[in-house]
Image (cartoon, rainbow, N blue to C red):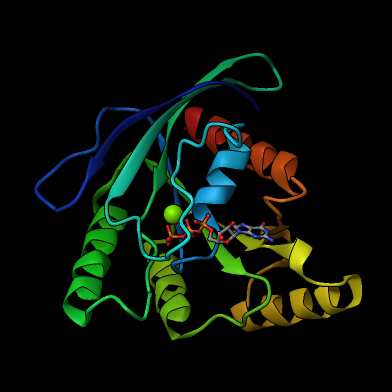
Length: 208
Ligand code: GTP
Ligand code: MG
């Protein structure tokens, strides 16, 4: 998929609000500081003028943010969708009550959005999925949405450490290795593979 145009389309901060329109949606989920905003900027070619805010202090994305993306499939067919940036969960310094509120918002969104075609779940390649990740992943499997797992920040590991770590995270997640993409916002590795996979999800759901 070729990205042609990206614009911020709106945000929702509580369960009384609705998405900004009627397009198919793909949501990005992950623990706070996993590199979600960096990945979104890389995938949308917005590394010079960021569209998703990259934070020095984690836990900054508190709302569900919608970006309208216009692109073209490899067949040159036009594609339009909302890329949805979910709040990063599990940040230790956020009060428990706020965490629960975010979790409720995320679960409500995942459960009630008919236009949601798939979820991209991010995991930092250096860390085994923690309890918050496991809860999220279990929830994702329950919704039966197409899920894709992206291992972020792979540039931070040496080649040997990286392949061992990838194997271990894949085992820990209990997912098919085909569902995994290794990614770095620093080198751009994984970007094309992710775009191709997103195109597959969007174009497949077109024909149903
Ligand atoms: P919150 O929105 O705060 O939950 O964080 P986030 O998941 O959006 O992460 P963000 O993209 O803001 O990145 C967090 C930190 O990790 C920043 O310091 C980034 O520069 C760094 N980072 C993100 N992706 C990569 C990567 O692929 N490689 C390296 N080396 N650093 C990265
Ligand atoms: Mg962010």
